[in-house]
Length: 584
Image 1 (tube, rainbow, N blue to C red):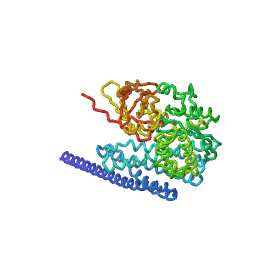
Image 2 (cartoon, helix red, strand yellow; image 1 turned 120 degrees about the vertical axis):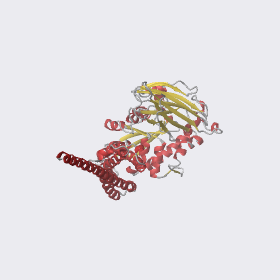
Image 3 (cartoon, one colour; image 1 turned 90 degrees about the horizontal axis):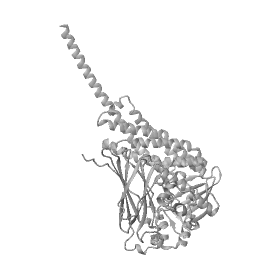
Image 4 (cartoon, rainbow, N blue to C red; image 1 turned 180 degrees about the horizontal axis):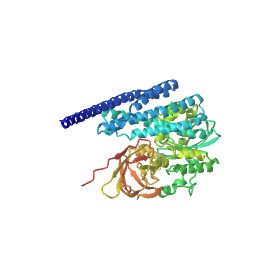
């Protein structure tokens, strides 16, 4: 009888224990569910506050911005606190539910980081600059801005790593919105931090500087943006900029040999023209080499060796005009962001001779630069320039080693620096005009990358580049020689000739180019550890041509590729295709 009673007690104990465990499991699930719901509510409160914060900063109302930042931080910290319980990681492993909990925790943690490590330093720096308008104020803020930028970039990368496709729709939408906000914010903060590291010195805070600005004309495209046909020397001292001299390409006679060293890869791909003609300074992706060429040209003509070289294109001026407002020109008209491209890159070549073009563009430069730089708002500049910096439309080189080290590691370091910073899975597609005219306003481009990996062999990468000539078929032959090139450079009148170059990741071996339709054979070179292939493509008016570059990847296809390209007048769509299914 005793043994029977004992067995009954054991069964009751097991039943009670099982019931207790079930109750605890239900309670734990309920607790985590409540915590997740509360955290989501806190995150939802952050979204409108982020918009309020941006509006307050844009209005330069830093008192209001700080008040909003306190509420932003309160909600972000509370969300983070709610997602750090001991049971939370256990439920992240639950199929279906887990990815959503991981996303809530990740977003909460990163927003708390942004609130604590980014917002306050940026507001402090912005407020100081608003009061002082002095490059030294930016220098004082450089260290906290650098830390804030690192924190912002880390937060952006962490949220980018969240798989939105595995989330419930409302949460997926929130993560997507947050990604956009963090991408935009990271660009502004990073640009602000980079400016803090180099701008004070470049603007003469530590002594006078001579800055050579190359105005690239994207109507005749080059790797870095466009031909370097216009130059401006600026004198920088104590944060002020004075226009010293302007020059056009006609002031620099072509040379029989390169005026300064040219990277071997550029010579192998494009011949000796890179260093012999001033217009080709940004044909190489190595902006330090471009700056060396520009400095040599300027020194040979005017006896001045620049302390810094800056390359910009018309869309940089358009961004600044959008922030500043229209500028009055000597002819009584107003130049605005809306009409800048047409008035600078189309009208002069349609209606003026070479001498008239030079005079007009120099008058515009003499009016626009002082207007934009007088009492410039650093915060407005940082916001306006962030997108064009991300697109590679501004490159800067400094003769001061410490400044150059900072520039070379940033988005301002030029095409090659941007490619290296993008990682070992990054590709670059560069365009160089072979028409000899200003047909770039009619040039469209698109890039498509596909990586195939099947079986034990090397993966195959296909880079397809489509070029379109949108020039009007019925009137293209009426365009002036300055636009069409007149057929003098091997491209028929009305056609657009372009050298298309693809720089592959390390370990990618070129395996041919197809679709060229009688174009010249491809040229190949090794630029550091990257194989580079270039081919010339001609496109007739109203037509489009596609060339396909093939590469073999010895390391396989580990992650989706990153694709950079020459900044063009019109956006360049980039598509990375999903790997096709393997047969068998």
